[in-house]
Amino acid sequence: MHTLPDKARHFPATARNRDVIANVLKRNLPATGTVLEIASGSGEHSIYFAGIFPSLRWQPSDPDPVNLESIAAWSDASGAANLYPPLQINASDLVLPIGAADAILCINMIHISPWDATEGLMRNAAVLLPQGAPLYLYGPYKIDGLHTAPSNEAFDNSLRAQNETWGLRDLEDVKTEAEKNSLRFIERVEMPSNNQSLIFRKNV
Image (cartoon, rainbow, N blue to C red; front, side, top):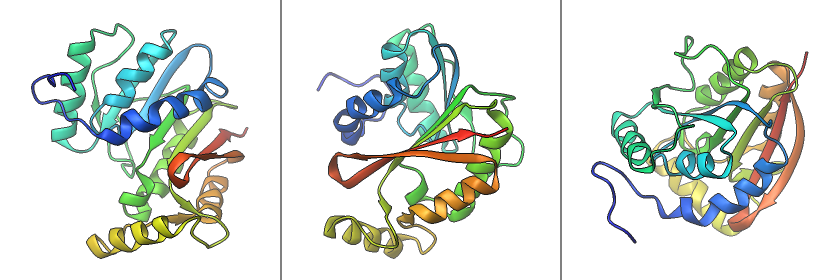
């Protein structure tokens, strides 16, 4: 691997899943506009997607100051003109430092955050998105109350051992929370390593 920019973090999972995620995004993102990424982590996804979708403006965000420094470092190193400086956003915040978005992405957050983060994500998506705009989620989920693989069950147990408010969520619970906020479930796409892509769109 090349030398990282100063303060930049590297998460190996990003390189493994970014292309399969991009293939789903190509079918669901608008042609132009601003894409808000919630919980951008290291910032590597935003950098990569900004290069693949140059007609879209990418707005990364994260609540963690260390991650915000990493996002900024990757952004500065890339020089991408369509990548905005990161915003400090917690998904459960009642007031966000952004007024609107044409699409929202949230990758690998829901299982490593309290449930109120998912509630806040849906609530804020309903406020920020125009009619028909997509909310894209990626990560491991339970389907009909069951884990999709033994490895996911072991992962779930390890998360709950770290923090009792974390853990894999059931797809039906996520769909119900979305529907409370005028977000219609569109599609579930099975992804490698027992992950799922979930597509929602804003109703009227």
